[in-house]
Image (cartoon, rainbow over all chains, first blue to last red; front, side, top):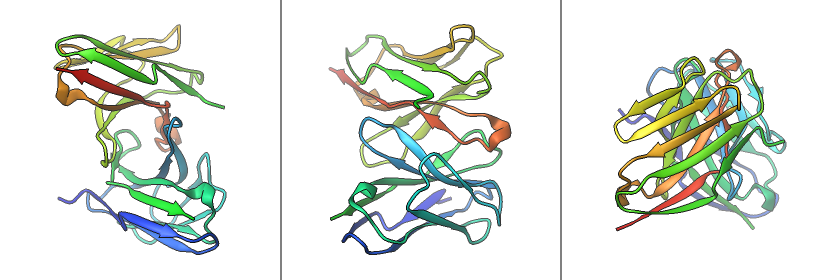
Length: 111
Length: 113
């Protein structure tokens, strides 16, 4: 099993550009999450989806949108990238809201 | 507002020693307390977790100690090995709130041979 797969692994954007980070899980989990990781701040929740068709804001949702396309896929979109969104982004999934399985991350730089 | 505070930020331990990382939380509604281990360039992976109805959980060389009255929990790594060198994150969540994890700031552990 691949687990949680994120694409791309690396990305450089110019300020104002848009992009979508893709995430797919093959574990049939109901819950999916997007976190960002910044030095000294741990991981912070951007958005989460408790089930297909539902999404909700996390701690730091501003500047982001999400789509739960189906049970497997949960995408994160940056409509107009800003340097403050330079970070490492992790997608995760969980079967019942306890143990979370993380992807390998997307390292995003906004210049 | 940082709901989960972790210390120390970095830790250097000799091989065979005990590594101790501490976390404190504020929200008494939290009912799940995991520790995650992260190697460079990788995503975090669950190491061990505890629920507040027990005071200690041990899995191999890794032990969580939980003090509900003090709202604190800690990770103890016995007989630390160079392969344990990684960043460790504590976290907390409420299962009835979708399992959204609130992470501590992380501890970078280095085990010297």
